[in-house]
Amino acid sequence: MTENLIKTYEVIKGADILFPSNSKGEPIGKCPRCGSGVKENKKAFCCESKACSFALWKENMFFTKKKKKLTKTIAIELLEKGKAKLNGCYSERTGKIYDAIVILDDTGDKYVNFKMEFPTKKGGNK
Ligand SMILES: [Zn+2]
Image (cartoon, rainbow, N blue to C red; front, side, top):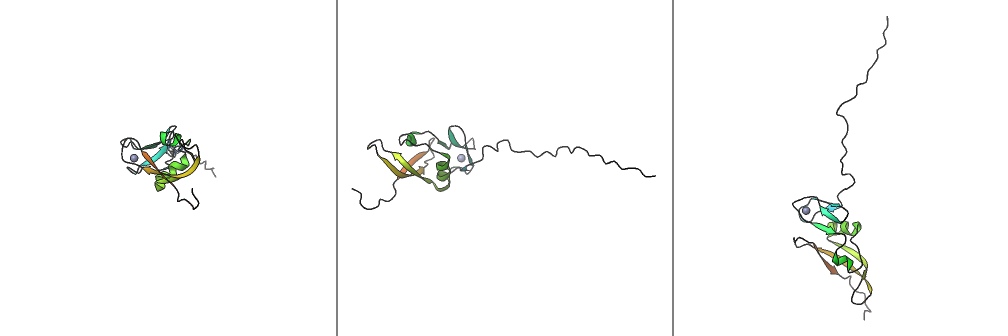
């Protein structure tokens, strides 16, 4: 007499892989102050650490004066190299458009400062 063995499949409990809920907000770089991840939110690129107040605001005076926005690309470069190219800046004084390099000048203050550096001029500048 042969009996068919019916295999029963049990639902494996607790085997669900938990996906991180914040997969959307992957760190874009490392915080220069504490080394934690820096994540993007609506208004800024902020350090994950609550004790750390490091933040790069998307709309800050430094950039808006030049009719520029602190984009994700710029933020990534700033965090990685400490500086980023900023092309097509508007000069309030002369009304002209120029290219510059923006440098992250973090003094550890509440707000992060920026500095400007100009690419070496090619001859023929009047
Ligand atoms: Zn930090």
